[in-house]
Image (cartoon, rainbow, N blue to C red):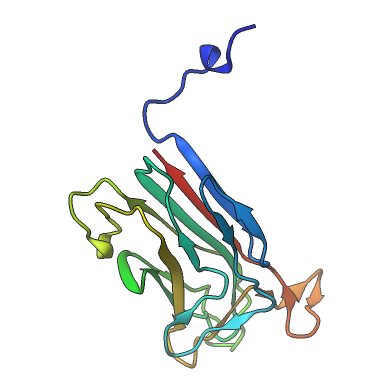
Length: 194
């Protein structure tokens, strides 16, 4: 019997080096050269008028040798709790904003009735380019990312009339969710490619 690569040829670029992925419940994941402990998220988060760290979105990551691209992906539940829940999301590397990764989320606007039923999966993701000739953090380009850097997401609401909740459910199985909403844990994935 031949090797797997005899049948399926290996791509010449964008080969996966490692993937760190898990539910943000405090678990530790072993990478190639480091271990990573994800944040322990135990409840929902309400947006307010100032940017705040999105709980569970932060990871201090050291890419393995020969990494050319890093794909950061944070998946969370987005639940507008007033009107359409217009919310703004920013991505940061070591507290510098990656403006190219900016996102805005909202659902259909129940302004005339005051209802806010639209819910969805929120997602902040971006591919960092480590092959640049100089660092351009605002565009997610780096020339020499070989040490640990902290990647995280921050969020705010548009104003006090457009609030949203992250990682909770207002509705469940044909009725209202119990308590402050049924908890939905976020998922964080960081993947390194050559």
